[in-house]
Image 1 (cartoon, rainbow, N blue to C red):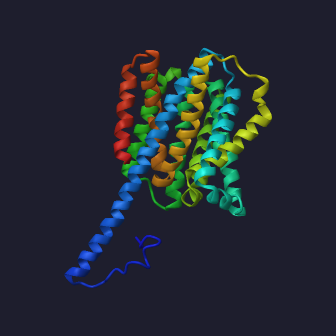
Image 2: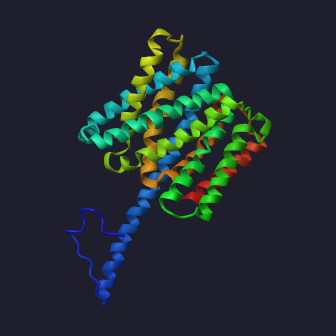
Image 3: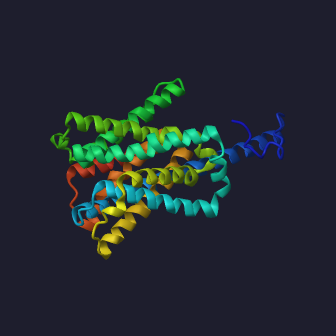
Length: 327
């Protein structure tokens, strides 16, 4: 491991064998390990928080669908455009220089557009299509197959096989998601051929959401990369869906649910999750993000009075063990 950028000119590490040189090298390694540990901790906490907010916002989405009969595509377009605007406000105050640098670099613009179209936008669109063609539990389980795609790509890039902890984490994540999403009943997986294709495409585009921006995140940060994609996808969806022509009738509670869905389920959750991808790498972050169904189940139990089943508890246990293995 090399000396961190900005430190090479300030500190010379001795190669001597005397006690003072060894002490200096130990102190240097401790500082590097400390930075790595802090980065890992921040990444884990950001990923957990982002996935937790996804699960929490899912309860708001269910309320909007079931009580106010909000159209899914209307909700998608409104979510994207308003979350994108929130990102733009944040960028204007904290990251204008990085935003300008990104959008004046032709190579990075191409990567950003690929992330927008074949990552964020396509993933959310096909997830909604998969829900319509199957059901929410089936769509969730199929999207979780992104873990396999990410693991294969990561291992190919690093020319290695999967590690034992990675395989164990993958199995536990898939098992936990299946148990929570279906209640352990395999017959709950309603899969038509069209639904299967939509679900598999959801997994592919979910993996693309993690893998495509990997080169951009370290240089520009999560708010700039994620916010740019959110704003662009919001413009695309609004151009086609035109949500202003079909505004649902929402009372105060409905507006509150919509605000929670936009702020927590899009703005904060994606910013935090992509920060986790930046700090941990795509594979670890995507595994930890499978706590989303745990958050959704707990939130539903607290707010909607939904009771936990034995399958739910077993799924919670599998995902919690997976998080400890992954960290």
